[in-house]
Length: 174
Image (cartoon, rainbow, N blue to C red; front, side):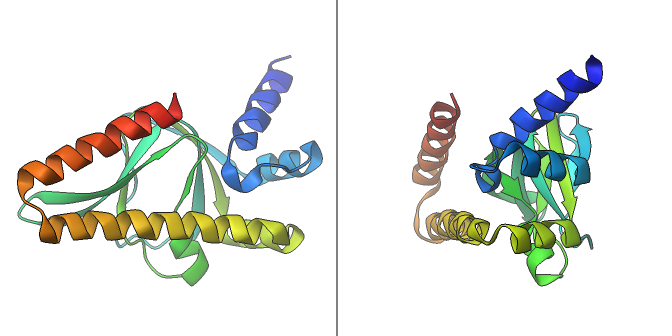
């Protein structure tokens, strides 16, 4: 029935999440049951810098952009988040406010876990910690690259590099 199809599609969506790869179907069903499943429309804010919340977001479908205002209506783009990726983990780990905005670039389906649920997941699956550390390191490297480009490169070079990153992201997700 519809519930079975919905259940199978949610499990398939979670299987694509890097953090959950390799989990058995029982563990995936457990996580799926704990998640709040939410859809966002294009250009809809999922979270805003300064928000206080203790949720981590898993992108099951769609693309989001992580940005921050830098004054006078200008924004810096940190990175795009595609299906299979996670965001919002910093506030969950350190309990502080959100450090950036997340806005849906396309219609998105997100699986959202509360802080206590994701920490409980890590207690039951300690092998997932290195995956999270790897994700955080990749993010930090991308952010460092963006800041270095802004500080050191002229606008045409920055635009060319940004376009290459976007194209590479589209090729990687195809």
